[in-house]
Image 1 (tube, rainbow, N blue to C red):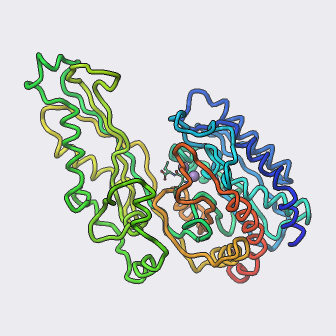
Image 2 (image 1 turned 60 degrees about the horizontal axis):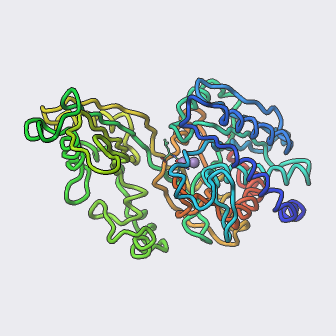
Length: 462
Ligand code: BES
Ligand code: MN
Ligand code: MN
């Protein structure tokens, strides 16, 4: 172990230089026309897997962006870890808000700034470097490992379900390990055991059949922007509850025990509001901030557009208006059901003055993972060794829909071992990974592989 850990120390600079190379490939998955960079990134990942000593490395094409697979299976009788992550990233725009260019990883202070630094290239790289350290110094890992690194996570993993269904044998394992979430706070390592689901909708309204002069026509037709904002404004009541009938029907109640556990976490609403620059927090009445984000369903308008938004003034009564609205869901809500309830409600409250289209763009299910599993026990021990602190248990508000699919299709529980930070600016300008977390993550990964067999004894699937 000592040799493996000190190898990491000795190779810090090279590890960071390689991460910079990985990050430099702008693998933005929303860009479906020009997939050159996505493919280049998949190849880079595959090449790196081969360099560090993984076997059977393959790039699987899908109807969308390719999946990269690699394995090391030379530990007979030992558990097999299926490591999932994604090499695709969110678009970097608006570029002018970045302090340094998004695809030129730049170290400032104790952070490395770049798109994908934390979500998820940096966290995937943590495990690649841990595997390298084992294979270079020990010629072997204490476990078998299969890596599944996809390129469509940020656009809803459209083709991953089918890929998993088609490759059940290839992906056979004892548990899934994912590093694609955050620690509770800096120097506060945590195990995540819950993620929210998602249902992402778009509403398009059409009023008059063309843009109109607002002076000549204003007052006679319902402006679609007004109609749309009237609809959106009705989706929450004065207590911050979502007004869609039946929306809360399937919501699993927070147990008294879990509420008490959340209350014990080191949290300050005041500090949170200050950091976000809001004058006051907002949310569903009767629940704390952590409860609202982690365990309550919510509805957000992600974007709304229509009419004239350029410089200056243009007196127009627009023909169209649209909005993108997402619902974050919790167990036991189903994303398809939330989408249906949404559409039904929107149609019911939409005025007769406009025509309306409601579309379901994508969705995924919420997950709760067991916290008494051998994988989680190994992760607790590993975090303790990697960060010198006992981790706490938390949930997250974000979504990784494949977690539920791994359970359903492969029967596997997931360990969510996040090394990001809550203020890491993922999906936003100046995304970063903390260097202490990056190297602490590598140490933790090394310890995790080392601890796992001991905890798995007697828990293996046949
Ligand atoms: N890494 C995130 C998921 C995440 C975010 C986990 C915050 C924990 C905390 C992932 O890359 C992501 O952004 N997921 C999308 C899912 C969607 C596109 C289906 C999300 O949560 O919006
Ligand atoms: Mn991610
Ligand atoms: Mn993301």
